[in-house]
Length: 338
Image (cartoon, rainbow, N blue to C red):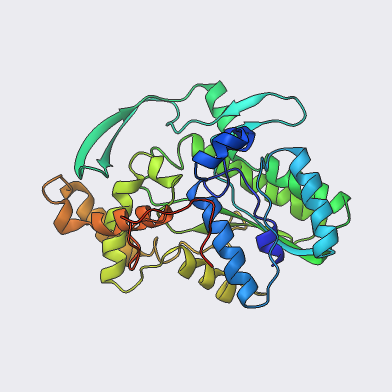
């Protein structure tokens, strides 16, 4: 349960700061985010099998949250043997300077024209994205790079709550060349490179195997759905990987990571990353995705891609589209079913 305890973060998995500050009367009238209920449901299921989870909700970028977390870890676990850092947040305030940074999803150098998808209507269309400024690029690295990850590890190490042989993982995405104009070759890519440098710095302090960036396959998340081209790429990828018997969801790929990719002797790439995107980027998958890509139009989407699967996974993030749930019934948002 140590890794779960380490997953406090400002994202869809926690109420927003504004919700946390709202008055008592307002809280009675307003439900929390879907992620808040996911956390409560996780705690119920964990307790059913004799586990004792620790969930903290707040601004994971703040030193206050880190201090609170360290105190709770001492009380509940003593030390941590694993911390998984998985952050999806558009804004970060630097605890040292008080400056607030906002990330942007833009290309670098020149405008990029790229094919994308309106997931609501199923329309495939071209869009032009303007390049980021140097200031926007730096801000994106400040929010989505590795600085806060390293800050977490340094403070945990200084507090003496890391067990011998401690390891930390940071999940990332690299993707295929089809998404690179907006992803790897853009502001997001700069932030991802920063993760690699911070992983090296953590290894320099804690040991050769202490920190790894883990490259995962494309999945449906609230964060990824906001990136131009990625939803369209995902709908094609899912269909191809299903047809080849290689499709994995979030749970399946993380299960494969822990079962097969974290032992001694596992191959790393040139940047010392663990690769769980190997099935997505295999030649048989990418050759077929690349063949379909120029053929994609609004009219051919149903034949070449799987928009239905994408929509289903997105709805399920927020508790919708679940078999056996009667969505016409009134519910009390203050009650989490046991």
